[in-house]
Amino acid sequence: MKIFTRNRRAAFTLIELLAICATIVALGVLIVTAQEKRKTKSQRISCVGRLKQIGLSFRIWVGDSSDWYPMARSTNDGGTLEFITTGEVFRHFQTMSNELGRPIVLVCPADKQRKSADDFLKLSNFNLSYFVGVDASENLPNSILSGDRNITNGFAPTNGMLVLMTNQPVGWTKEIHKYQGNIALGDGSVQQVSSERLRDEIVRNSELSTNRIQLP
Image (cartoon, rainbow, N blue to C red):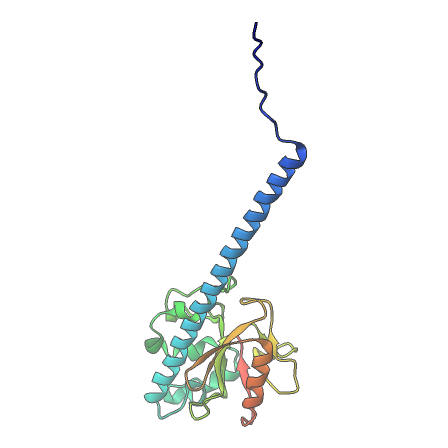
């Protein structure tokens, strides 16, 4: 007489179960990290594109305004010179509304603290992600024209104004691009720069009598 026995299915041991869970968690972390890196890279590229449009708008404006950026021309001549001391950074962009096209280009996709204005008439500093280099000039191609607002010189700005000097700890804060940043230069080009490279740019701009940036 044959005796049949039923094979019992082997169950996972506690150690095997924990190993499987750990693997799933590790894969999840890798996937989320990869997605976050792709998102960060995409936002940085988009930011560069918007700064290029800003730089181009400044240059177009210059072409119609006797080779001067709006910050160097009086409001009586359609410029924004008088707004340098008021802290109203948005005025420099507002005067270039025709060149910029849409207010959305003034907000970096990675800047969660700023929201695009509906139109240029409603524009304020809270609708800006970018500073303005008020001493920039088209005749000085390396001068810093604009860039991410998370720039610092180690001191609190005075009425929104920072003066960048070679003997200061100029760099980027962790906001927006996490200790990185983008700058538009007087020749219309845009660079992705670390804090170290930013300091190099300040040295290259030493030909300027002042190197002031106005923060929104």
